[in-house]
Length: 152
Image 1: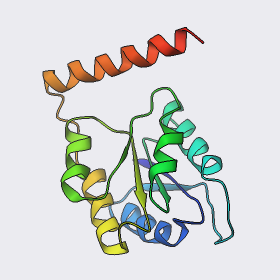
Image 2 (image 1 turned 90 degrees about the vertical axis):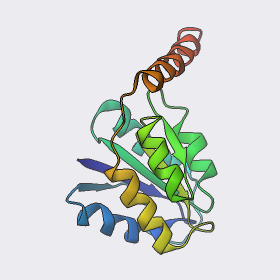
Image 3 (image 1 turned 90 degrees about the horizontal axis):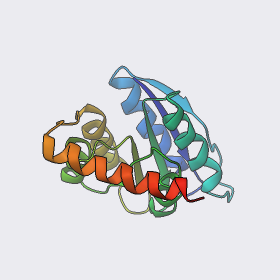
């Protein structure tokens, strides 16, 4: 699996911890930055990761900032992206199992490195259940997305 990862200055320290987990699981990493603690704008890192996932250049994406909120908002503007903001293990599993999320956002100021690594491990290791009720709900989400794409 190819996993794209991006962080702003608020998540840059956590990024290397998550890259280690991705590699430990045998996946390829595509690192879009940032690589400094200087203030940067989170959309500049959320967009390239989300576009890679939407285009199929990466199978999944992980975004890190101070809270994960800004990154998840920006990523979810890209058609085809289902980015979940996750700060606990149950949500990491459920968002893959039930929602077939293709992107994960976390906040370095909210979760520490140990928990963040476990969240990434669970999220990357959980497959979508493909249950009919979940697939039906995702079809409805896609219909909403298509409705607003076609009106622009």
